[in-house]
Length: 236
Image (cartoon, rainbow, N blue to C red; front, side, top):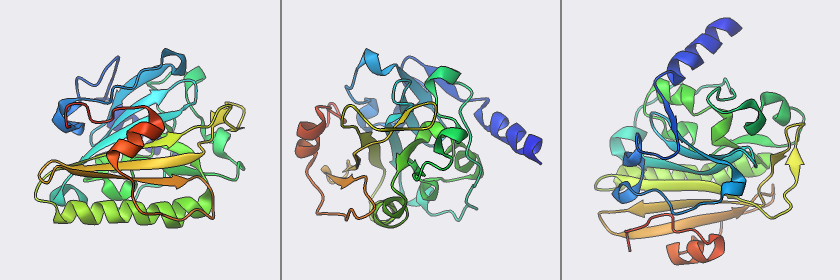
């Protein structure tokens, strides 16, 4: 059974792209323009998947950000939820998280592109890559953050067309780590939502703690100030 599951995962990844940029999945970004973030010390690698795009860091061994394009049709299908987490073989072993890093760590493998956003079984399989995960406080992941993901899907169902979502971790350095691979643990998480039809945007910002609650969303401008990143170049 295990060999069968590994085979399915490899087949699902076989047509995917790793490159120095996102040229094969620019449709995941507003105006086809990825964020302006650049930090060579973080060992960045762009990864394209069927329904999301990941800027992965070989230093933190987590995503830096994950981009999605959602709409009413993409979030409506009832897809059986996946359960099989895996390390993406496209990443060098020294630059990726492994399942053993999360074992007994006290943290969940927190999706940045959530399983509930996936439009089909292939993308559902892909979203369980550890390249899409950060160590997340378990109560936060299952309650507060889950509610934010649900609210984002509900908005996508009401929107006139596509919306663009960018999700990622925020690190306080030196960051605490888990596992022998020293996977960085974020101090907070953000989710940016942009609706081109209304030109409205907002961002959720939640500390990575079990007791954290979802406060009122912040503006895109405030997110830029807090992170120093222009996540949607050309939209303002």
